[in-house]
Image (cartoon, rainbow, N blue to C red; front, top):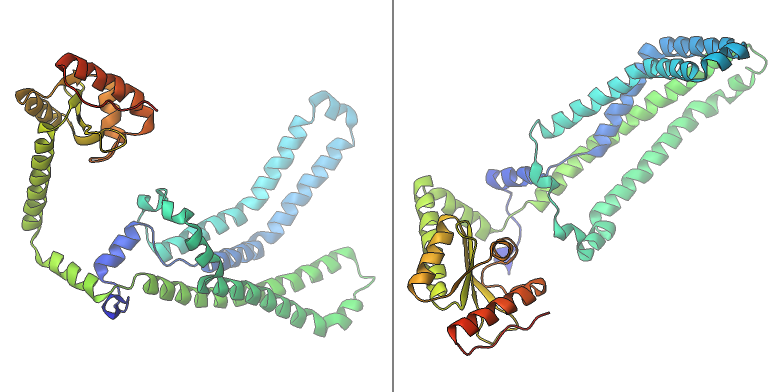
Length: 358
């Protein structure tokens, strides 16, 4: 129906709920481009120091290796440790620059709010239909176009930087290695900066796409807007009173169901679960359950109305934690419940069907 089309923009409440669940507009390309720029900047600033540090470490290692007796006496441990420390010291500025750039970009996009609900397992993510939509849907097409665009742009930049200079590169044959290394490093840095700038432009476009995609996902229909406005028009006190009233009604229905139960399984004070079996269903049904005060109330109602109460703490806790209200008991509990009902029927001399064991 047209009235249920998602044509309305998401309300602030809807956006807040989506953010709490971890559903936000985040561009991984923006993170990648900023980290790349940070790495290039760190290399430009600390590159000479990195080269000198690694060169000193290599010379020191070769000097030690030139005295095999000393290396054999001390073992390779000190040599490897010194080389490792030199590598860590040389690469630390670049690694820290990338780390802080990535964190800052994430904070700029998402803020400092942590969303634990986004980490909870969601069975919908395992839905093959949704997976097919992600693979063959419009978002997958956009991602494929972005990936192809990045490869083409970087390739075009490299070609534009190298092709006009092929003659000058050919003339560099025979020059000294230090000069050749500096020239190659300069050309590589120029290409990298141009590619990073192009990648940043792609990332900005991706930011707008991710926001548009999220807005489309969060769109609401008119009925949802009306329902939300109606809920917001109710004062918090009234909403609390309605919730308490609903809980009382639900508890009243549950206590009424205890009257027709066949048995109540109880932990002396903490848990209670009422079971009913009329033979029309494959297994007994959990008609009431509770903890602490509610458990005591279930037990009181059962005892006052002649419903057998059996203390079995492990079974009571298992029923409370694993079985929903008005649901049949699972197969792994068939045997325990069958033995329990058989005991109750024999004790009370009642004729009733007994749940079959699995």
